[in-house]
Image 1 (cartoon, rainbow, N blue to C red):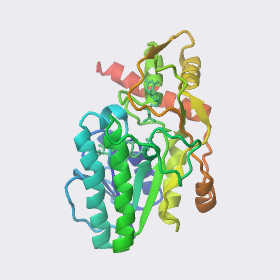
Image 2 (image 1 turned 180 degrees about the horizontal axis):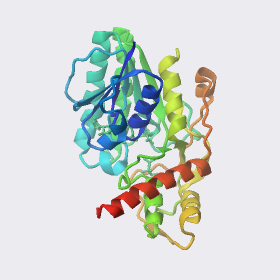
Image 3 (image 1 turned 180 degrees about the vertical axis):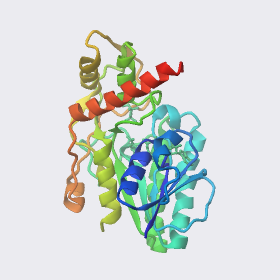
Image 4 (image 1 turned 45 degrees about the vertical axis):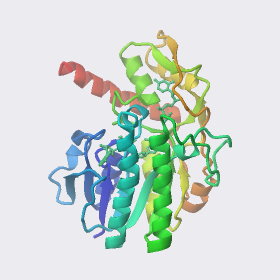
Length: 316
Ligand code: NAD
Ligand code: UDP
């Protein structure tokens, strides 16, 4: 049976991917350093005969016998990737380098979780894969954006030089259960603020846009990409675009319409607009998102209600 290595497997996306692979009867090795991942996300699989868990940092090499590498290890939320930007750049560059070295040695196929951030603050809208992006190389987001760009570069050079089979997904903003309540991303922030009865924090005037994909749709896209013939890079995201103010209003109306929206300073280099073109994913993977924002928000709000209730009960 094929062995799957999921780096970052205890994180938000990684743990949902682990669930899908385990439910499909696959062998899974989950590798994580627990920077933003949590053991509780994969706790249900501990002790399962097809599941192994390794505490490891991808900036260090590792020897394993595997067939597929789902390379997700990297903090994804601005507050986490900016906490130690040099470490983030190392995780993207050295982590991808180490995983490509492993893929080459054992003949595994590697899927890189890249990002829409490779388009930077895009001047082309919506963003097709052919757009080369507008990224600031020296700003506060650069450790992540440029880190993912060099990770993509490494994938394609390993493919050209060493015939490593690679797949590159450019993931757009994805949300759902298991995001950390304090991870600073907009959907988790708004939901947690509203559930706690706090005002919702709009950075800037809230006119910037994002397009939000529910986690189950995203995982389906990753699985199709890994198993298909198309190398990528390929956009995976939901093309329905919302302003951040519209998102805040949706969350507020669902949880507590009495709350206010308060404006706070916009962080440097915050992209003004973002929406994926997904024609390639439709053609090559037969994939498109199926979960509307209202539906995905309901499920995410429900899960955060439980998480916050547990935290309240334990006095955290
Ligand atoms: P996350 O922070 O929940 O997960 C990242 C996981 O990687 C965590 O479990 C963390 O502990 C682990 N990790 C970080 N550095 C590591 C290291 N050096 N060694 C080993 N493990 C390490 O974030 P996520 O949202 O699940 O994102 C997963 C991947 O998808 C990331 O590569 C991210 O860049 C990419 N991505 C996510 C989104 C999104 O909207 N969620 C969008 C674009 C790209
Ligand atoms: N944002 C906001 N309030 C918050 C958190 C984020 O207005 O409490 C904004 C942020 O400035 C950005 C958008 O929401 O314009 C998405 O932010 P997130 O960090 O979720 O993702 P990214 O900017 O990496 O796409």
